[in-house]
Length: 543
Image (cartoon, rainbow, N blue to C red):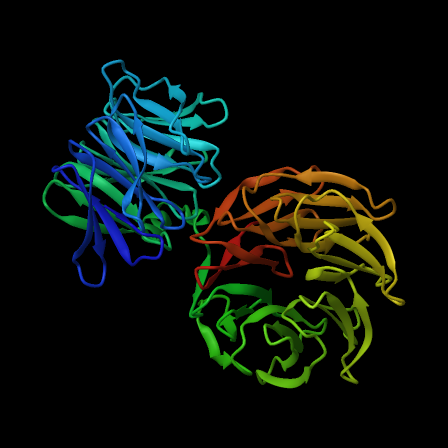
């Protein structure tokens, strides 16, 4: 069985060769797809829930159109298929199973069905496959008692995990991407550190063969299915605490918003954070307990798009889809004043150093500088961009703008006093979501929907470096207080940490259950807060 991305349907495969589509609420079959002639051993949805991939003992993998209820593609795999999965970008299909020719894992083009590669290494049938979220690694489990990792560029074996003493029946990757769970006929499920291939804690003992493993969406529970006719759940944080491996999980989850969390900031004192969400609320949280402090902060029903904290930590500003900028009092949680002037959604907000001014950027293609005390616009700049990010240079002499432009001018620099255009930065191939300026003012950093992060010399306005690793849109970036680390948030369900000196990633990506929208360092640089499309915020201990 496998669940649809929206959680409303599931598909099942059975010994009669039929794939069935079920309604979660009613528990009834909506549709039967017939096309396989033998047992259906594997079913998977694609990302948008429009297609289902099934694999059968009849040596075929079939792609089904859910809406039209028909076959889109049939692949003759040459393998009695036990597992068939999409790559994260859905360009490839991997199949594993039984083969008389001992070709246990094959890779196919997902559009044409053409053969791409055969992976050599296993000595017996392959039961299960999993793909890491970044698409760089394929993982397989086999009757030969091993779990193997494969480089998806060269298709060469990277590593072998050994520890099971009988067949490996199933594998699953945790939502944070750091842990692999495996199920085996040796009556155990195991947890593995994906970074180093080492087992975590003792095997999870069962009374009989373990057929399947599945992580909960938050990664805190592992469910297992067993030949003793029962299913079980296991508390992952408890297991990890017992062996001193808490760093593989977020420190804390902040749960309560009903829509995606698009902004997160640390408050002075290191005890609280603020979040903003498309559900129209601001919320304050206790950093230690993860509990909300007080009630939701609300002013109208429009979804919030951005927040920024004043230098003295006593006020914050929010931008929303109703085009207004609101000034809030931290102590009372009330709106002090509302500034109107933009005519479309406000996507970016920044304070100047002394807290006397606020810079806002909007989809109306303007940035505005507001006098906080007088509550009026000092400067309005027509940028020519749908503005996603607007920031001051450290000396406040310039304003950098990032956004979307028909002319493909995605990053522009303006004089902060006059509003005159200073420079247009060429390099990104798609629109820019986020900007950050190093404290010394020598480097501007940008994150884009071209999946890259770029650094720019602010004297010549030429590109210095491109940081690559994300496989989808980069939504937010933040520089650590010591200026050495860059954090990034992406549509690829990860936050990443980068060494700003050499542009190399630091450690493994911080995996989330959904798109990561925002990142924010604590004032001491030890905690990273992230806001996610799963409606939650998280903190991570990074030092």
